[in-house]
Image (tube, rainbow, N blue to C red):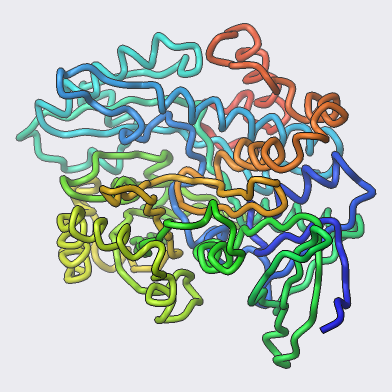
Amino acid sequence: MEVQNRSDVVLIGAGIMSATLGTLLQQLAPDWTISVFERLDQIAVESSNEWNNAGTGHSALCELNYTVERPDGSIDISKAIHVNEQFLVSRQFWSYLVHQGIIENPRDFIVPVPHMSFVQGDANVAFLRKRFSLLSEHPLFQGMEYSDDPQQLSEWIPLMMKDRSADKPIAATWIGSGTDVNFGALTRLLFSYLEKNGVNIQCNKQVQNLRRTSDGYWNLDVRDTKTGAIEQHSARFVFIGAGGWSLHLLQKSGILEGKGIGGFPVSGLFMVCENPDVVKEHRAKVYGKAPVGAPPMSVPHLDTRVINNREYLLFGPFAGFSPKFLKTGSMLDLLKSVKPHNFTTLLAAGLKNAGLTWYLIKQLMLTKNQRMNELREFVPTARNEDWSLIVAGQRVQVIKSNPRGTLQFGTEVVSASDGSVAALLGASPGASVVVSIMMDVIRKCFPDKLPDWEPKIREMIPSYGEALNENPDLMRSIQAMTAEALGLASAHGSMQA
């Protein structure tokens, strides 16, 4: 079949990953032609949508799973430092977009919200105190406070402290430099800019297959989901940023780097409160500790979310299971992902992670009253009538090809050795560190372009090539510059007018 359309770059999936990579490439190579294919009728409908994720604004300020306690009682803070640095890279790029007028009002997607960690029980309080001692000494976490004083905690989190029993010790950390990021809104802002600058964005177009041709291009079979018609497109570079669907397309590409990789879908449910009398009593993202046997993405948290200039409270997540790889996917997705090259890996993962399977089963059996009882560990006065259940997006956890079948929770880019195709797999902290991830794609896939692009990259990301962890002065200047550009400078936890 004759190829009807040819582009320099094709982005599959209209979420935050494709939006960010498209914007980076448009700045670095404005003469390149870029096409975007989205299977749904709108952009940012799946994992990037603001209602399909709750803990947005990951910067390791409050997420306890990024600071693991070792068997000897010491705490490893290296991942928290790494994630915080990556989030600062995102802030730099967003600040550049504001300075360039590409984003007119940063309040359309980012607002200041304090980040907190909250624990109960002697062992957890001791852990949090040690964690605070380590993080608060690091320049990236300056301004963090710790308290186990009920009076201070009542000032930080009045809703959570109201009518709380004093039968066990509690403690929390607070830092005012946290944010709430609406990645659905940011995705729409970026794609609006790209479309105005000549990027061809097509919804209701599903990429069904892709194959390499002798001339070095990738040919794509693109089906119109309304008419069923198949079009042929080709591109020098293809990015697969289609959420859970990325695994299927990676497998269809046939690249060696995609062999042996499997995926396990986990869905999430959240309790949401819209009652303004309740919502106004809590303004923070408060993270607890995950139950024993729970995946890292199931860390309970009570979050202030700002959506369309209105505040909500979300609590969760409660884990669920569906064989779908997308919220709008097929019940056959998981079955279709099983191939001869990853069957052994998937089997090993199933045997090794029996505890996770049992945890998911128990989560699926929870009633609303049982979920409300878990919420009351955070909000003792929570009333059933103030909270409703929503289904969040699907996350496909990466199962790497190794003898143990280890579940890898996180985000990973799989790219061909020649850099002609790259696929994004995995989940949290994904969106919050999107710019670092997409810069990894650029480094892996366009190494010959980097010397020419480096001046522009440094303009967009002033810390490019520098380890902020090793350069406190640069780090502080980046924090101040981005806080000013994004309207966060005077926040310290309060909404700006």
